[in-house]
Length: 146
Length: 101
Image 1 (cartoon, rainbow over the protein chains, first blue to last red):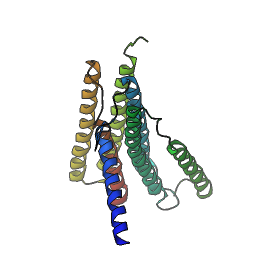
Image 2: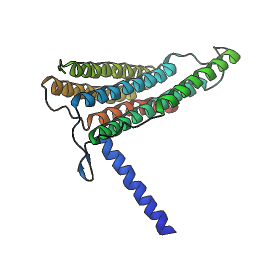
Image 3: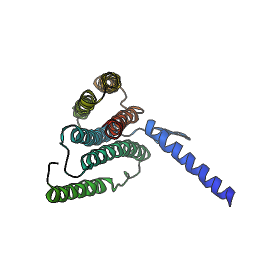
């Protein structure tokens, strides 16, 4: 039983390592070069999509920093810090997901496969919309200023 | 199909917009440090933040040069490095909000 667990653990580690390596170079894997170079315009479109997600991430990080810097202390303690930390965390997750999706899309294009499907945009929208609604309710019931 | 180089130009502008967005995040981070941290922390933090931003500008510069010269545009490390920078900014912001404030 322990051997099975150890083997699973080892393969999970190898998988993680492969993911890491793919982030830094999706054109290579353990078996050498992955597929063949697609039409470079597709690669450039993938690159622009990655950069657009990075700007989304930067906007969330900047929003979190702006909340921490410019929002006055609210009536409920720590709610301002909570909003800032939430935005910074979501920003970091968006950045990591951006490079993962870029690498998986690049790999799929090189192998002539369908692009990876993703629920991430929908999940992100729901999280942000939910956060906005919760915040609105908190502000309505507690008032703005301390 | 005629290639007018629009894909390269759009990609170049996208890198430019990204450096501008990162610059705004860097300024917001530094404003926090100047307002609430000690002068030494603000100066050291400013150095780290500015070095990171300069690294991003250099990545963008190299990328734009590659695109302009019509060289092989295959990307390898740059996206992961950009992610490290943005993640680093988010981490610095978290440290700031949790520890210093």
